[in-house]
Length: 302
Image (tube, rainbow, N blue to C red; front, side, top):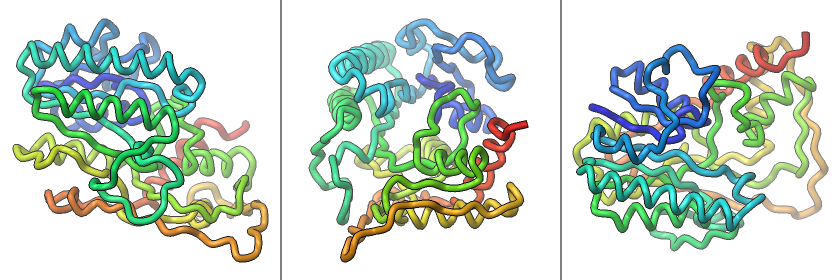
């Protein structure tokens, strides 16, 4: 099976492409990077228009697009560019009779605050440019003539393939890097807000699962870990993993919670996903250990 991955050396794309190459897929990896390429990607990376590659592919996985920081910095420009990009590659895929198209969206299409019980039936109502850009992408994908799959991804924890891939603003990755660089974990809030977290290993495993299936069902799945943690609880888990990886337990610094400040519930439901036979391993500890080790190698002062 030939698979084209746009944004294939980015945060999710790099880990996904490495995984798929290890599983024997024939990959074409679109990336803007032209130097410092990982050895496993040799011969697979190109930087011309990915629409030109569609005629050769069985599956397109579209990951190229702005992150939440870039989206907020230039919401109109990034939204226009992202829309043009996905429309161009969808049109090329239809012309080339590509069989399958996978698009990664985000939990943030549901808006803010993210609380209560959320399943695929909740109407999207993005409140941030990043959510709006991804909802545009969903609509373009679902209006196409292709067999499509949309993942609404929750909060990922896991190291990128390279330290210069700037996904260190993600809370789990940020805390792992803080532990290495400062020896403590600093929260800017009391840490009571809850989020659904998923290990990067589960994200790439979910893609493999659906590539091997013929039936994609309704074609829209929430991709999360299946349980929520408060930010403080996540910090405590990361602190508990530090002794075995870093040799010490970092302190946790945070503002005190005000009286009667409740932690709202969050249930990011993944029953539609698990009914296909895919069960996330929920092994955040393993992913955290690997991320701490990565940060130690990349960022520890000498």
